Image (cartoon, rainbow, N blue to C red; front, side, top):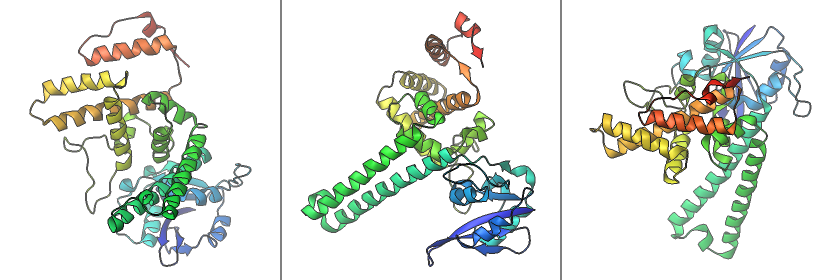
Length: 348
């Protein structure tokens, strides 16, 4: 049997309500009563949903993964689809969303691979962000009222600031601890050419399993680096966005840091892209041309990450350096030279 699954948070009750439908009448469950529905699932049951990241705890219960054993006890099939592919309009009531998911075209859904390591990473990143937002909001409100920062107030209030800073530091250490155990985080850190693991962790937590993107274009699209009518896409009021603006912002800030910090790998590539766009589009404003060059190195970074997570390449340090010089030369208008290194590239 095919089920559509959706959830909503009821602020009045302070709890999450789950809505399940097999295409007809939808049923509502609380975090406690949902267990009855889970027990009715069989090997032939298919559960369809959108935004699987919001269902982490429930999905682990559906497939029966215990946090201790980390082994599935049941065989319920989980599939997910992208919201914009469902053609469900914004403002649709949750019971109707669940029913429409159950009736939707099976071609728009993909098998969901639950990874507990990514779930733990996402939780750690969100916990840190919650404390950072709380600390920032408190400081801003107090400054509006008193005209002073939290540290400039009384000793007792300053102690609260230190407590918050300590909790944020603890959450950061937890993010780094979890991220250091995930191979994709290490790969992304190397591709981005930076020492800290926080930014790669934030990207991977928002991105999910990179293997779900079957092409580089799909990854670019999800991160908001595709083109709509010759321009970068924008969020429009009342329309479903088919990209994640948060990821585009993180990548743009990272690219700016690489350029301003004169990173030895990424700054020359930025300069090459900037020189090209200065020649091809002199009518663009200075800011427009700079943002375009930043966008290009962000896309190149994502491309390298996609390649390294999809193709296991055995490369020596000398080969990496040779490839870097060759790519830079091509960007600057040169031609690729045939070298032994390029010939002897081994693909495992």
